[in-house]
Image 1 (cartoon, rainbow, N blue to C red):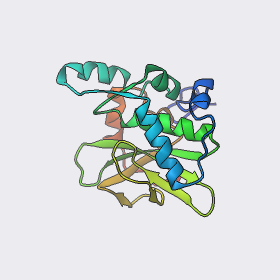
Image 2: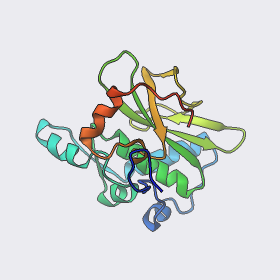
Image 3: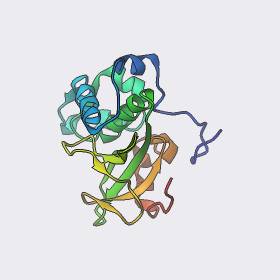
Image 4: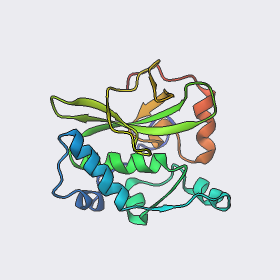
Length: 186
């Protein structure tokens, strides 16, 4: 099976033994459970301060790591790591039986900025929530759709993970600004 970029359909969010053991005994049935998972995940990761001298290192790993690798490495950068955070969170949610979507957004005002957020579906009565894991924002009811603006961001594409969207390495960022926003409700 191939993804949109024609590559083999591999995933960044595979629920490996490491991922499953990290969430053993947890449940994901409410908004409080989402927050608890985020707190646990963030406490397991060291944050490396952003400095201009490490930009080449950041770009070398950007969009390349799987959730397993992120958790095993045990670090993120204080900037440019939103995709890593979302990928790890989605894998943890998947291992707890929850449906998620990777959402790549860009600035609504046309600035060349991009960001990654997650959508997660909780059991009834909750439904779908948008969760920006890079900031201290709480999960918000709803889903990203074309034309909807969430905290200044608009939808570019949704998928299983960044690789599903054709984002395999830093230089793929041009795709986000070269194509119009997605009309699919995927």
